Amino acid sequence: MQDSHVMNISVIITFVIGIASVYFFYEFEFTIAVLLLIWTLSRLFGVRFKQFGTGVGGALIRSEREQKCKTQISIDINVEELLKTDIVKERHEFLVEKKAIKEKSFDAWVKEMLKNYQKHNITDRPFHSVEFLVQGEIVWKDKEIQYMNIIDYEIFIPVDPTKFKKDDMIKSGFTGLQFEVNIVNGLMKLRLNGYDKKNSPRVVREGILGVYKTSQAVTSFPLIYCSIEHSLPMSMLNLSLHGTESYWLNKGDEKIDWVSDLRSIQEVFATYNYLCDHAEGEDTINDKKWMKGIKDFAEKKELLLKSSDTKDIYDKTNEDYFMSRMTAGNYAYQNNIWRIYITNINERKEMYLERALSDYYEEMP
Image (tube, one colour):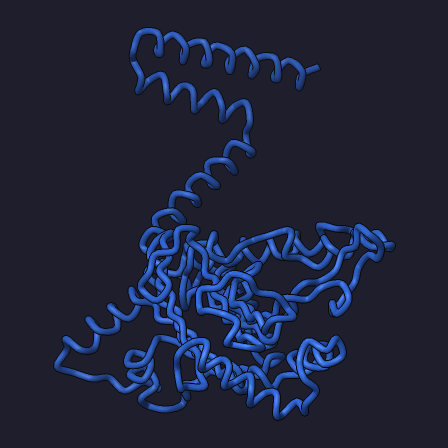
C-alpha cells in the first residue's frame, strides 16, 4: 500500500511538471519550458531516457569526428600474382571446358591474360594502382569525386582485348575476368565476379529460383580492425545484412538463424565507433572499455592478417619506423597479391608538427 501511495504521488508530480511545461511554452518562456519538459521525460522514462541522451551525445561526437576524417587509402595490385591464384585457375578450367577460350596450359594463359590486361589498360606495368581519398563523407577515386560515396573499384581483363574498349560495359564471366575491390561489413575484399549457377563456388538453392554465389574473395584485409589507423566514417565500412553468409544460407533447405552473422558484426561496429570516438581522449589508458576494445581488435586483426598471409611492411623494431611511416604512409600492409597504404592525414599532420618543426629528436624505444 505504501509503495502504491508513493507511486501515485510521483505520477501526480510528473503530471504537474508536464502541465507547467506546456504552460510556459504557451507563455513563450522557452528556456523554462524546455527544462521542465526534459525533467518530465526523465521522470517518465528514467534509465531509458538517460540511454537515449547518451546515444544522442555519442552520435554528435561521432558526427564531428567523421566530418574531420581525412584518410587516404592507396592500393597496388600485382596483376601477375593475382592471375596465378587458384581461384583464377578454376575459372580457366571452366572456360576451357565451355570452349570459351582455346585450350592451353594455365601458365601460358596467365602470360596471355597479363598481356591482355596491359593492352586493355594501356600500360606496360604488371601492377594496377588506385587511390581513394575520404574527407568526411565524400570519396575521391584517383582524384575524381564518387557520387555514391563508396570505396569501390573494378579491374577487367578481357579474354580478347580486340573486342572490348576500355569503357565498354558489356562484360561477363565468359568474356573476361572481372575483379572488384570493395568493402563489405568492414572487410576490404578483392573479389572475382562473374560466376553463374553452373560454375558458382556455392549453390544454396537449386531450381528455377536458385540462390548461388556470383563472386568469390581472392584476398581480404581487416580494415575495420585498423580502427584508429584510419577512423573512417561508419558508412564507408558498409554494414550490410546482404553481405552476411547466414542471410543467404537461410534461403537453402536447412533453415538457420538468418541474422546471427549481422548481430555479431553489429557488435564489432559498436566497438569500432567507441574506439574511434574516444581515441583522442586524454585518459584512454584508464578507460577499461577502450583498452579492452583495442586489445580485442589487435588480436582479431592479427588473426585475419595471418589468414591472408598479410604483413606490416614497416619493421617496428627499426629506429626509423616512425619516419618511414610519415614518408610513405602512416600504415602499410602487403601480401603477394596487393599492397595497401593507409594514410591518416590528420595524424600525419600532427607527426609533422611534432617532429619536423622541432630542433630536437627523441629516440623511441
